[in-house]
Length: 456
Image (cartoon, rainbow, N blue to C red; front, side, top):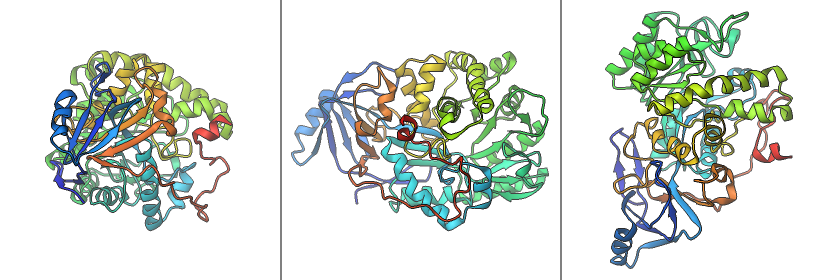
C-alpha cells in the first residue's frame, strides 16, 4: 500500500509509488509564469524538478512515467469552504429535518470522490451535520475512502440570535449544522468538546438574518467578549478559529477577538480594511454560491430580488477585496459546495473565475489563491499547494493552459490525472449512479445546478 507518512497535524496519508511526470508545462502555484519541467515524485513528496528530476529518474529503470505532453501540471485545487455533509440541499428544511446520521455519512463518502475527480486535492469542510466531518477525514486519511486531503470543523457555533436560517433556529440545542449557545459557559464547553473530538477548526457563525433588520449584509449576532471566549479557549487547545462574517462590524470584531481566518468578509468599510490590512488575516470570500444564483438562478426559479442581492454583494465587495489582496492579505478560493446550486464536483474552479472576472486578478494570481494560499485552511502552509522539492505531491494534470483561461479547470474531460500524496485517483471508473432517497429532498426548487443543467 506504500509508505505511511505521518503529518505534523496528526493525520496520515498513504504515499504512492515513485513517478516521473515528464514533458509537461508546470504552473508551480506561486504566481510565477509557467515553465517546461519534469516532476519527480517519491514516497508521496515532490523530490526534484527539471533536469535534476530527469537525471535522478534515469537511475531508476523501474520508475513509473506519466507522459504529460500537452498538459499543465500544477498543484491540486484547495477548496477553502465546503460542506461535504449537506448532500446538495436546496432548503434549510431539508438540512434540519430530513437528514439521518448514518445515511448522511454514507452520502458524504460518495460525494467526496466527486470533489477529488474535479481536481480538488484539499478541502476545508467548514461545518457540518452530526460531527460527520471528523470521521470522514479519518476515513480518507486511513484509506477507507478515496478523497482529497481534508481539514474539518464540526457544528457551527451560533447564538440564540441565529444565523442565515433565521427563525428556524431554536433558542438552544442543536439543529442541522448549528449548535446554539446562549451563555458563555456553554460556548466554552462546546469549544472544548469539539477540540476533544479532533476538529481542525472551530467555526463561528458571527452574523445572521433577522426579520426587519436595517443593516447592510447580516446582523451581528455575538458580542466581542463572546468571540474572545471562543478564540481564547480554542487557542489554548491549539485549534484555530474561523468566522462567517457578512458585515464590517463582524469582520472588525473577529479580528479584534483574534480569529485566524474569515469566510466572506463582505461589506467592509475603510476602518475594517485598515485593520485587516495590518493583521493580514486570510479571507475566503466564497462568491461561487452568489455567482451561480446571479448567473443561472432563473433556471431554478430563483427570486429576481434575491439574485439582485447576490449580485450586489459581489459588486459592493469586489473592490475592497482587491485592495486587501494588494495589501498582502491572503485570499483563498472557496465554493460553498454542498448546496443544490453548488453541487459537488461541478463548480470548484468557479471561484477562480470570479476572482479574475470581478476582483480583477490575473489567472496566475487566482491559481495561487486556490493552491499556495489555500494551504492555510488545511493547516499545511508551506507543505502543500506548490510544485517544488519537499512539498507534498498533491498534483493535477490538465489539458490546456489555465494561466490564460482558468475555466479549463472546470472541464471534466480536460482533467487527465489527480494525485494526492503521490497516489493517483481513479478517474476511469464512472461515479456510481444514485437514485433519489425517499424524503431526502422536499422542494421543487431543488434542481441540482450542474454545469450541464446550466448549459441547457
